[in-house]
Image 1 (cartoon, rainbow, N blue to C red):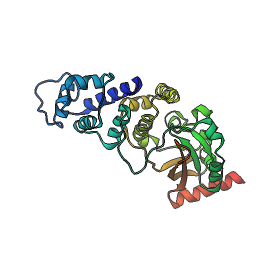
Image 2 (cartoon, one colour):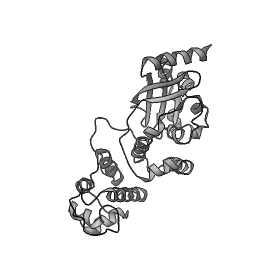
Image 3 (cartoon, rainbow, N blue to C red):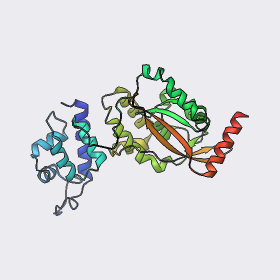
Image 4 (tube, one colour):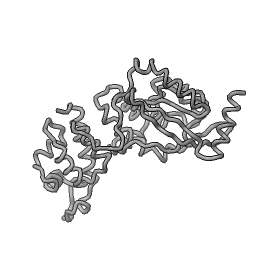
Length: 287
């Protein structure tokens, strides 16, 4: 049995996907003016081969059983992609779709974090490459000196704001190390953030962060309201570094198998110019 919060999130997500579907895409001739955007509930139910009352209750978050087969049938009608179908399965309490790697659960407890001496050794060993340890919520947990040099404003932030999603949407774009291509990646970042949220939907720390982000950033609130989900992925980040210029870094992420929910990300310069500028920045910092 799923929790009330998971059922409510599942219903809201399905409703948002239903409203984005057009009758034409579903093979339904458009006849006259429609009062609601997208498909009607009864149309989804008919096309998926389920009862109208059952599907209505599913969207309303009522405590009903929903098998994987039936959810997949609804997903096909709503044209859900693999990440969205995985999200639906998790919210319903069913097994996620098989993937090449399994996403770690949890976010790392304080006790775990205090004993990560082996990770601290790794962070130091990869110098002079920037490296950071983050949890599923994208909180910055550990970092090396090169990462601090590239991201001084982020590391200097209050601990509860030392978070990469917060920094992207609320952080000072004019500070040293700010990411300058964030607007281009914003929708993908929020979709991946919701995907991870599906693993921690009953965690009050997650809910608190999302509420703060929605209040502090209208762009985040607008993207969060779309309910889009996407499997997390890594992409290059372009930093603005005063006195040096732009530095483009390519991330490589590694999940910690013995510390679920934590991942180590190491950044390498994406091109010769970025490598030269990073070297110049580190030389200046050590002078």
